[in-house]
Structures are given as structure tokens and as C-alpha cells.
Length: 297
Image 1: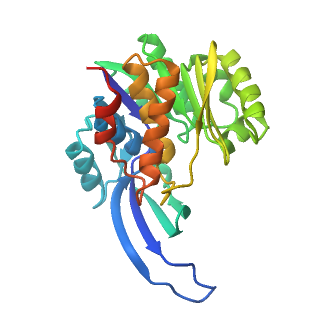
Image 2: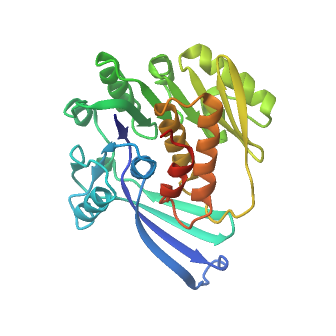
């Protein structure tokens, strides 16, 4: 029952400081962490922590960081047999200057993105679900979804498709998750209320997916399916760093649905995973304890 996550693998440099300096000034870094990051890696690690076998199709560099990234993922229990190595590794710098306040800087070399050939050369043997991180090129995401459909493998996706690819991709999706900015980019409407998010979600359900999750800023994540909906409230309490919270939400949702949980239970597992990750510095999840509270025995 392996989930194949198709997405980014990156070096994640996390820095904490007490405040940002003025132009020309400096600030003292009070904490520094170097992690394996990127949405693809984060989701794969979170799935393994939730007891779901996971593999990742992504790119690491043909540089000094490539082997380290690959080895760290393998140590986390992720199947790295499909990891591609070329060029320079992607880099993310996560600057946290207060509770819940962060700035994310990304260096994503062209060669660190997946290609259609990478997808075509990747096996779907033993894969039960394909999970797409839609920040990859649109033609790559369509190729991955088409390959999954040929094998009868369900497809879930996180993010907004690249412009021009939504019409081809949405009918092939079983589950779609969007943050507020992604929902606005996809539909032209900002989900500023539960009512608007519900309207957007209903339209997206008509386009193909059987379940849609949309973040409503300052309110929560609205999860919709054809027979109902559920709102998972956001909470400001204990938020340290929002990096990776969406990835953990997606992993929790996927793990619960694979365990045949009903949509309400799946939504709440996803919310718990996101809250747990937001309470930590950096995007790396730590969800092993959560798995024990919900999985059927």
C-alpha cells in the first residue's frame, strides 16, 4: 500500500532570530537547523511516521548535498529508489522571527525540477496512491496523473496546477488540497469566508475530485465531499512555524483515507497533523505519536 509522492526534495535551512534588522544592519541567529525539506520530502516523511509506506519521486543534486538528502530520507523509512540525481540541490531558507512569523526564501534550479522523462522512467509497482505536489511543472503533473490512471491508481494532489493545465488535470484527481492563495489563483476568488470556500469547493468537486480541502485564512480548513462538508478550525495557540503544516495536513488526510476513515475523521486527523507540525521549528514533521491515536487496529 505504498504512496508515491511526486514532488520537491530540498535542503531546508531553518534560522530563528528575535527580529529582522533594518537595511544594512544585522541580527543574531538564535537557533539553526539543517533538514531535508521540500513538499515532496515532507509529505513522504510524514506518511511514514503515520504508518503508511511511502516512496518519493524527486530530484536531488549531483553535488555534496545530494547523497545527504537521499540518505536522510532513507533513514526516515522513505523508499528513495526513484530519486533522480542531477545538477544542484534545491535550497529553502526558512527565517522565523517570532511565533508564527516566518519568511521563506527558495532557490530552485531548473534542473532540480522533475521532467516528463523522470515520470515515464519511474515504476508504479506496488503503488496504491500517487500524490502530486503541484508546484512541479504542469506537463510533468499531467504525465504522472495519466500514468497513474493507466494503471488504475488513484491520484491526490496538493496545490494549484500551473496555468493552462487545470482543465487536463482536475478530471484525473480523486483528492485536491488548496491553501487560500492557491484557491484564489486557481479560481480567481479568494476564500475569505466559509461560504465562499464552500462555493469554490463545490465547483471543484464538479470538475473531478471526490474530496476537496480549502484553507480559509484565519478560520480553518474546509473539507468538502459530495455528501457533506466539515470545517477543521485553525488555532493560533502554540504556533511556532507554519512551514510544512500544509504538507502534514495532506499526509494526515491521505493516511486516514487509506485507512478507510470517513471524511470527517480524515479531516480531523489532517488538522491534528498540521497543528503538530506548526508547533515545531522547521517543516520536518514528527507525527509518530499521532498515528497511535487514530489508526484502526
